[in-house]
Length: 293
Image 1 (tube, rainbow, N blue to C red):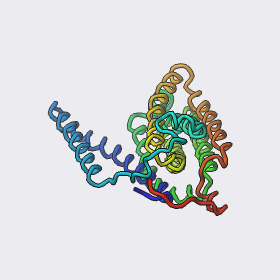
Image 2 (tube, helix red, strand yellow):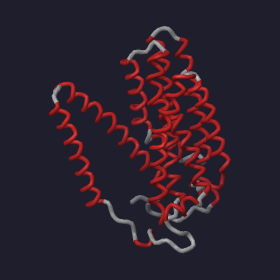
Image 3 (cartoon, helix red, strand yellow):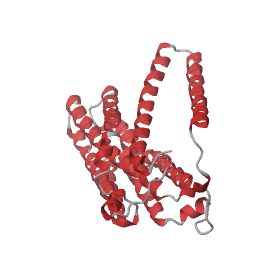
């Protein structure tokens, strides 16, 4: 559907739409339930949700073109199926390292910071809600402008930058436990939420397009499915690991997460020229012909 050079902007727009949908959907649903404390209000909400999914499916069937035949025909040398994907060790390294970044840089903030802040800082539920709102709002505002910054960086450098930003933001949570006023702690963690959001913008703007560029045309769907699976795995691992540490060593969530982020960034940085990079290709004059994906 899009050309190679449009992938970064397309993935950024997709993330903006997702964040906006999650935030606005939760808000609308909350108002519906709050103003109609009856079983029928929940039923109406879920019926409306089902209708929107059905409408989206019809739009996809009617408006999204099917891939050209030549892009989905595999050669005997390349093979088909997930076995062919499993032979791409560089891709598996990228996915593995990015699962670590998704766990410590995304799910630790969204799933672990709220209960940690409630138990170990002066913040109440309203203040925690403000911090989450600051993060999601900043992502919606900054995701697309961040495309210009990311496209000027080597992909390995962008991964390293995102890892460093995540490490700083994770460590910056710890001083909040030493603050005794809610306003001061909220101000600090709101700033931390913005730093997390910057890391998220850089990270997701480089990860999605990289996966699409690494995929052979006939395996694009499978590569992207593993990309999506990485987010699902992080949503499972993040709360499990973070919840265990909350009970045993809460501070280890943040300094341990920072260490894991730096290690993942180092692994990705060492990949160097083994992953496709439009900036490097443009500088060397070896850029591939435009393609759609």
